[in-house]
Image (cartoon, rainbow, N blue to C red):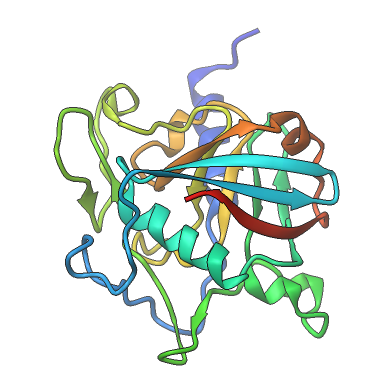
Length: 228
């Protein structure tokens, strides 16, 4: 049975709020808008990353053609080992499949209580400050992504180069669109309510059955580059 439009809208709003990171003490300052202004190396082309979890292996394809800055940031964090022994701290399956979220570097620290998982960012050792990247969204037919603010409007899902389809890999953030750092999520369902608001930068190409088994508190043992 289809739910009423008002109920569907309320559920969409609730699910969107569940994805937002808790507010951080530091004020996000994105590292430039676009590849030319950013200190983060962009990914030109594609790459494959394997996630080894305590439920099995998941293979990701990063799509730098569509999201070069966001994919490049993730690839850099993988190379640095930032995701080793982190926890999937948020798994939302009710009232319908939503996301599996992880990647908080603080969750690998045994001194950090589980109640604080999801509040951390990647701290760049070169600066001693959190690294933030701007929201990156690319529309079909455009040569460059758009940066810095959500891209909204009627029919936006059909216009995006990378919509939120089941298995999509995207960055979590706070209410500031330019506050993504290290935390990521995998969509458990098509999530058009998030399209244009969050940066999708890849997809699961093997192991979605493993993602379906992940529960809150499970561990991401390691992430490694398979195909640069």
